[in-house]
Image (cartoon, rainbow, N blue to C red; front, side):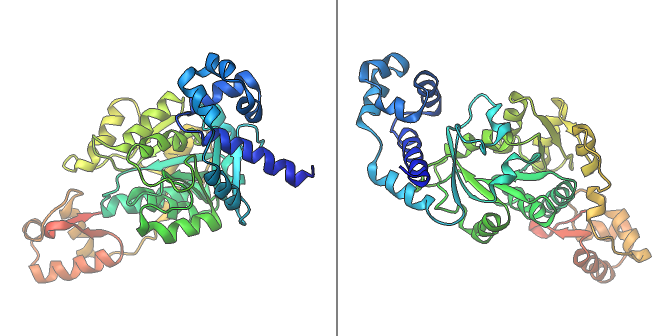
Length: 366
């Protein structure tokens, strides 16, 4: 048997074990621990397997995986840029091996070397505010330039902004998805997924063809945190998947960071709760790097392009504060007419100092 045939045979064994119905990661690892290899586990007698994982799962093991799905997965592996990383592979992410529940295999598309680089998870709300989106991208780019690969979950909002910041920086980004790698969810992030596959890497523990099932997204969060030195939460409501990722970071012995926000914003409540529980409050990328023991000359503030302001614009920003505010209140505080204030606010919006929110509200970003 040639080297290529041997690798294909080993990949097929790992796939058959991973794709066996009713056989979860814990049972898979038990079988590997007892029998030594996927093929030996698959060849084990029913009684021998039952002593390890019970009769029901042993029966599923004897019935085997869907042969068509195994064949489709092997064909996918033959396509350029596609990889299968298993617990027996030296390229498997070392940080993930240190966690309590590593997947026995990962489907990967892109630059798999990024999976063993120092990394930071950046997560947050899907319904992010303009300020949160800007902060996520700015922090991610600054941290990427400082040597950290940015890990996130390819969701809308903060995740997407974090990926774009990571890709814009020097260290790139890892997307951990909750579907099979032959699907992109949400569809709106398809161009971003293609960019990650080309310039970063996409990974999934879920079989090809797996749709966006609700239960898979909390599960993939442990992989996001497990790949990372720590987790930065940019915006999050109190009932948020981002808080699941933060909790898993704590359980895995990782650092947790949170960016504070307005006391009036529901998207700040999760971050404020994390800070009360001991997460490090951060205002710049250097706050994160200092906590991780990494030196940097770059901060999130440096990542922003500062535009000189006219005196009237400076006065207008001062009168706004950082909470959402309407035009009438801005005029009342600043003493400006609606016409003058509107013109100045438009300039500030174009320069990235102000964002328009739903309901006619405005918010200062910096």
